Amino acid sequence: MASQPMLLPFLRPLLDADSPRKRTIILASGSPRRREILSQMGIPFRVEVSDFPETLEKSSFSNPVDYVRQTAFEKGYAVLAKLRQQSPVEPLLVISADTVIITLDSPSCIIEKPTDNEHAKCILSELSGRPHCVVTAFCLLFTTQAGSLSRIASTNASDDWIHGGGWKCRTCHESTRVTFGALDESWIDAYVLTGEPMGKAGGYGYQGLGSALISKIDGCYYNVVGFPTHRFLKTLEEAAGSGDL
Image 1 (cartoon, rainbow, N blue to C red):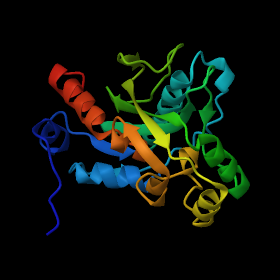
Image 2: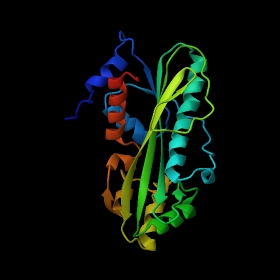
Image 3: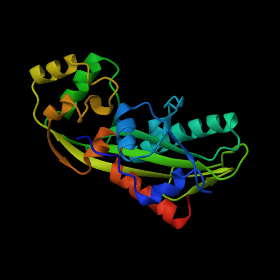
């Protein structure tokens, strides 16, 4: 028997058509994993894939976590600004996210999505037998008044609320330590041939065949999949309870 979606009480004012806090919820991601996870929470939403090009210069950030947090913000803001132009008065809540793999070397470096099969093999060979860190940042952006939006001089993604012209946001992140087993070339070749590594940070999908490569994780499973469920819901609950949302 299929389970019902879990709708937590603090979400109801955001969804009730008669509530002054009602918002249209937008997922600024084309990831099927994020769509599935958000649907399981009982949150009605529509998808608007961000057109942000993800071309931030990594070397301009003091650490990889700041990079992934800023990317999550930029993805969401691009969608918020686009929708605000289309509908100047509709109250919106945009949810965006970004996931990267970070090596535990010193200095650490970011491993993103492979560009082709050979690149995927190189990434997996590098991760073989070693721990790495999966970091997912998510951003909550919502409109605070009708009319057009304006950015502020500094929009460095922060754990604190950032207030812009007609909008505000909060960006959070979760980290999970993942350890690969020692993989010989035949394992890597077989996995790459499945096609699963493409389009996935680090060249693997834990929720799929990539689970065969992993010997241990320390932290949130859903963070590795691409959306840290518990951290997201607690952040949303805090925002609703404090009146920020």
